[in-house]
Image 1 (cartoon, one colour):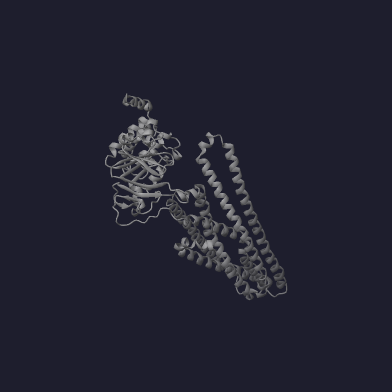
Image 2: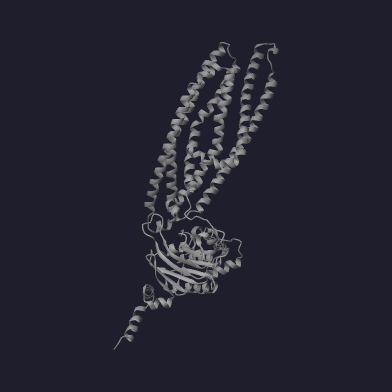
Length: 596
């Protein structure tokens, strides 16, 4: 119940529909009892008319009873249909709200959240767990109504007809309910195991299919099939354990209810033979007893529904309760448009639970309209530094300023909409090329899409496709080469014409001639806009106004291409390593300048 209470905020907006549904169920139950009563009256009327020629002894005619009975059945049907439509609609609405809340929460999470929770696990919660809660709300409400209204109307009617028969079955009920409670605790344990193993199965499938090319390239199909078989076996065993508990409940509950009915038939039949009650009264009593025992017969299904819904609720709230790594707390003092001037003041940054800081005492100023290149060894902190520009990683206050204001004072939406970032890993959606390039604004004019494609040296490639911009590129751009995917994501960044453009090593799969074409276009397009480039190629770095060299999280060199070459430090060493014949030329220069 503690878990299910957390669903109340999602049910509260639909309290009137729920109340209306419960009221309709109440009225339907009244007409159901009335139907049983009219049937008993009809039986007694037929018995009287059949045993005596004097019809005066019968209070009603068979026709009158049948007319009222049909009217009662029709009214019950109308109210039951209305009630079920109400509660099932609420179930759909609650599921819709849960999906919206889940998706909104996931969108706000950072890398630390996704490092602890796999995509397959999140998808299982978004589909399977929400489906369980929808069933709980839609069908669980109906069963709750049955469990409340059935004993209320059933016991009242039974006490009215025969208190002796009613008290006879009362001692059986506590034993039945205790058995159901005990079995529900066993079911809770197995439900958790089923959901967790299903999440593990979904995560494995999602990861495997996402890396299917690597699996096939490494000839690991058999190993992956065996690994899947193990996880699948765990899920099957967990589901078997849950089914075993559920089957025991579903078998024993109706058996115990049937025992109570048998007792009433034996004892009530003896009362009919003794003339203490009529046949109609016994039929009416048995019908009301069936109403009372209906929740007991359904207890197995209901407990399974509740327990699985409770587990699903807990699993969803593990996501809902996750605190976003980046807190959006904007002030009202920041400008509406970013110019692109950054200043780092002695910034030191560490990832959560990391033993050492990734960036150490970074002090750097970038002027608006300046082009900056960042280079360094693997693990030097380049990607982390780029994350700080867009607050993909959160900075301490007072360490990073944007246009003279602390970057933490800007709304996240403004920072990320006015700073375009082209990531190192080119991700494309399984949609037409046009939709991928104009992802941020699908209504953008086609001419602008072509212009950005040309700037990214992608125009000729697209024109070679039969459907050109309408070419469906498949999931993650599977139909494109590595260089084509990088240029497509670059076009997606260029089309935004943002005040700040960040390029994270997005030329690694592009040949040098194409790279030179793109960089020359960038100079023209972004002459007065800030551009930040991360690359390992000197051919890329030398186009920047300034080059920042990182090593072990610190800035060790800064300056233009020519200045850094004159310094003869780490950058000059990188230039010699990447320039053919650089070592021989350096030796010749040394021989010419050497003293005689």
